[in-house]
Length: 162
Image 1 (spheres, rainbow, N blue to C red):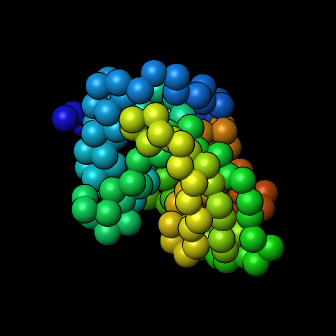
Image 2 (image 1 turned 90 degrees about the vertical axis):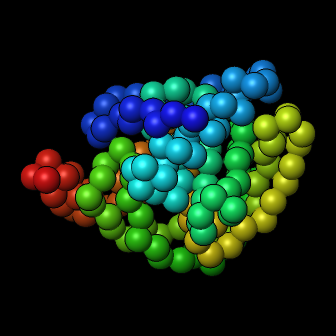
């Protein structure tokens, strides 16, 4: 496995929608492994291929270390709960800054696993936050786009001063 170079904000590729994965092979599995290594080194709890400049719909999430690793290929959120939650978020592509983001508390998503098998899953709590954050990234929505203009400007200024 390898640690991949990460794009840094404001790289325009961070706001580009990713293309669906069409081939489920050893290359895809190796990319997922490289993303996991890259995420741990960053450090972070979620990463997309887009963070490494690879515009494919692939994300890896680890909330509690390697044994909790989840890989999602071509994830799409099918349902959002009306209830909201606030959680502190950040990005491996914008290290050193965080801010609270409000998102739906529960979601249901459809995705494929590394073998190409269709799956559905419901999530709440931190997993729901991470999935929404990473799926936004796959859709070309960088996390600070979910902030008010004032908060976004503060986060960008803080990041530039790091």
